[in-house]
Length: 413
Image 1 (cartoon, rainbow, N blue to C red):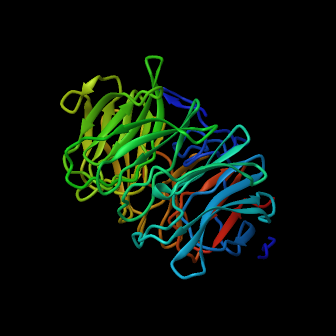
Image 2: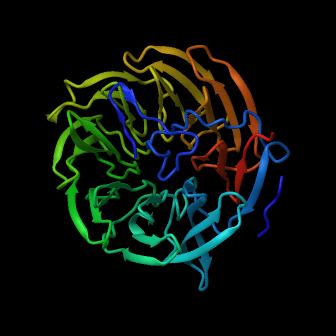
Image 3: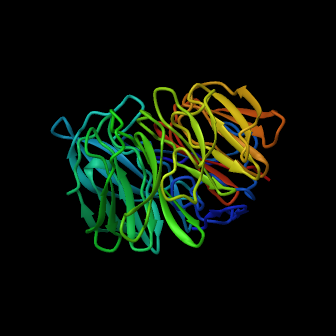
């Protein structure tokens, strides 16, 4: 392969955001919520503009890239012989050049059926304390050191998937947490991040007919106590990180195949209820027990997203529907400031940098919109390749994964 030259949290009203030099160590960055506020990302970019390098990636995968200490980590699935088998791999690349540093097989598995918009390697890795944790849904999780050597594997929590794997893991203390929402008997699981052994397992019982979902949990702190927020079919639940005990839940009927990661600020959680008719909900996070009737502050039913996560910047909440209609709302009240079409279909979650919102379409077009209560498109950047993965940021550079390549874009002096 040849290069082409050319844990902080949002707590209430106090927003801790990533700096231009912060590592991008998990899905949606150091806050888990798509914020790179001080990064001076390029406004215009593509194959002929502000491209530092492009690197081909073998195999397939929609896991988002993560970055630590000038290295990029991601996962991919590579078909192997005999037919019907695959090598599930972790990759490390040099962030400055795109050069591959190591490429390690984590699991060798039979190929499972996935949705046409999914892959065999969709969950995003997470990095902490010199370790890279990779997750392949029902096919297993593993820990590697930064030299690419596997420290432990665990594929003993198998469950019957629907449409493949999806949600990414979260680290809380010694626990690696993720949802296991398959065809039946869904549960949330925590593994010991040092050994891979199970710490706790909490069943989900919501009454939703279709049990499968793919959301990534978010860690928040309310009144000095941590909560793991994990949406699933029929309800979003808050869990105690120590033992998995359910703290509260808010129901949303038969909503299923829930994908977006929640975001948090102003004492509110913002999340979508899934298919078939998605509802964007704002839920106060200070409840106990079933808070469905008491803690839902507001809802949005028109152009709510199925797949992309929301983005909270100050008092404004930004979302984009799967059909390409973006919205800006007042985060506290749900009032719609604007709702406009940015085009294409959308699965990737948007990011904010330097007063701009970046929306990535599945068709490979990046719409850059001015952050604020007035809709203004600043640029349209066609990449020419399909992309469903959310991007990453390192310094003032944008790292984008497409169907066949990884790109680094940054403004040239």
